[in-house]
Length: 151
Image (cartoon, rainbow, N blue to C red; front, side, top):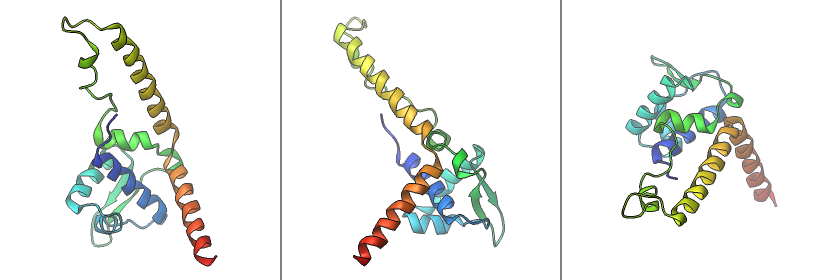
């Protein structure tokens, strides 16, 4: 499976909003600067996230973006699908599983079964993992860094 930079940046952007954890909107430029995402690219991503109902935007001098739902209700799979569309198996894998006549080979059928299992596992993980889960991991990681600094 392939996940684009757009999907990865989408996750980074909503995680940034979740960790900011304020009710005040966060400007796209601030997210772009903190996460190292090109601003114009981030604006397209935030637009897709807004259309999917995952973030809200406010205009004006004090405008910006904030999560539209609690972090516990935003699944990572939702973010990826909002910016990249449906998660699919790479198209180039499927034709190789057929012989010259277009029929699936016996080995191709076995390999196809493995790809189906891989896709199901990935989808299950993406749809089980919430933004709140990533926030907890980020806070745990930060606590470990602080602890290691003091040792």
